Structure formats: structure tokens, C-alpha cells
Amino acid sequence: MTRTSFPLQDQLRGFSRALFSTWLYHRRFNLLFDAGEGISTSLLNRVFGIRKVFLSHGHADHIAGLINLVNIRNLGAGDQTTDLEIYYPQGNALVEVVKNYLAQTQSELSFSLIWRPLEAGQMVALDDRRGKTFLRTFRTQHSQKQLSLGFNILEARSRLRPEFATLSQAEINQAIWTHGKERVVEPFEQIIFTYGGDSRPLPVGAITESLFLCHECTYLKREDDERNFHQHSILEEVLEVAAAARVKTLLLFHLSLRYTQEEVRSLVGQALRRQGYPFQVVFLFGDRFHPLADPRGRPETDDASEGSASEEDDRRTPAGEEKP
Image (cartoon, rainbow, N blue to C red; front, top):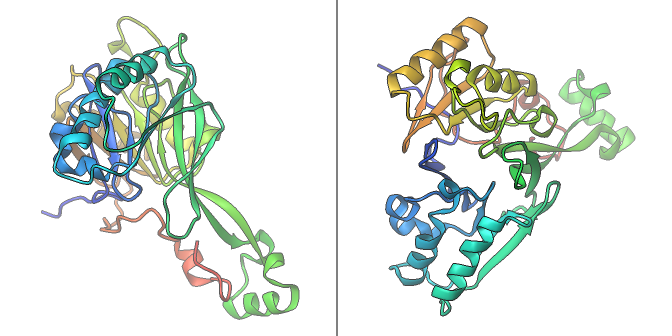
């Protein structure tokens, strides 16, 4: 039996169950999204690879792991001198409580602990050898009492302008010679990774054409939200948002404890087959990622990179230009 693979399967570690704990580590960029309890226990010495932490909001199941994370980085057997930056929604009182606690109990750190408040629409440069990758925040809808944020990792790329898109490679080369590269090629920002935190369905405009969307999915059926809090998302809503945004891969997380792994696989699989959504779905159940077979019946791929170009772009690349 062929094992189903998914993009980034070698880059992501995480844990998520609604109410208990949520965190996601992206190894390529040394980023931690949210910081629920159990991070240090799970990652062990891998915590020394974390350079930046991005908190979506201040609820306990998303920030409780910060205290031990800082402690282990200060005392554990690893690089104890590399700075740690913690980005959080501006004015979040609950994060400030943790910040003050750490200031009182961890006053002699071996590294610089830097707290950086964020608002929607802000950009953060990421460590990238090519200097073309950055993170941008966007507002999400979760709690009325505090700002909650989602995060897009974007990469600066280039592509053929529409009027040149149907030309052959020889014609493209001639156009560049005649008009100059700037007339033939246009820059654009590709969302290569999105993390939404806890929220109602994310705004489509903020996540359009994301290559890898991480969207919470607390409820698989609408009737399961008995308390009707309107703070979390339902499977059918998430799938509709992902389809409207034309994402490539969808990761579902923050699943309610009421569901077994088999129920999640069955209900999500039924929805995919029923609607024929044009993207692959993976769900995070506890600390395990479970990819579902491509609902379109296409062959599975072992390509785990965010930056794979489309077949059309592979055939026609501007001379001297990096493939998008």
C-alpha cells in the first residue's frame, strides 16, 4: 500500500486538540506558531532551533508552553545564546501576564528574549539566504475581547505578464531582447504558507492562492456546536473558504476531542468526495499529521517543497530569470 504524502511533511511538527493545546513548528524558517503546552516535551532539543514565535491570540491553550520553552532554552543542552523573538497581538492582556511572569522568574537569561507587539497588516522579515521571504499579519475573527491574528509567509517571485503567457520560449527570449525584462516579467508575492490560529472562517482575500493553508476546524458538523459561541469553524465552511481562495493544500487542526481519528478521516473524506474540492487535505490529530488521498484521483507526489512551479511555468521561463 502506497503511503500518502503531502507537501511540508518533513518540515512541520505540531500538536493540536481543541481546548487543550495547539502549536505548530515550521523547521525551514525556524518559526513556532502558537505555543500551547507540551512544546518542549515534544520537541526536546529541537526547541533550540526556534528563532521566532508568532502568537495568534492569548488563550491559555495557545500560550501556556511559553514558560517552559524559555526555561529549557536557558538551561538545556543546546545553543543558549541565540535570541528568541516573541510576536503577539498588540495590547493582549493575557500575553502580557506571561511576559511579566517571565520577567520576574527568568531575569538572568543567557539569551535576549525580545517581545514584539503586532497589529494586522504588519510585515516581519524572515531569515532567508535569498532575502526574498517575509511574514505578513492579517486580522482574524475569534474573540471579541482581544485582537487575534493570522500569518502569511510570502515569497517575492516573478512571472510572465499575461500578454506574454502564451508565447514559446524562443518568442519570450525575443520579447525580452526587444522590450527588456521589466516589460515581459512582473514581480508578485506568493503566499507559500498560512497559519490562521483559532477563528471563524478566514477572509478569502487574505489567503488567496496560498500554497499551504493551516485552518482550524473545531467542528465537523454544524449541529456539534451546541453552545453556538461563533468563535470556531465548521468543516463545510473551511472547505468552502479553501476552494474560494484556490489553495493548494489544506491542513485542518484544532479538532474537537469529541471526534475519533476514524471519524475525522471518514467525515472529511466524505465531504471531499461529495464536492470534489481541488486541493489535498491533511488533518492534525494530536501530534500526528494524516494526509488524505487526493480526491481527484491524481497520482500522489513526494514533493515536499512550497516552491514547486506549475507545469506551464516549467515549460516557459524568462531567460536569466529564476523560476517562480
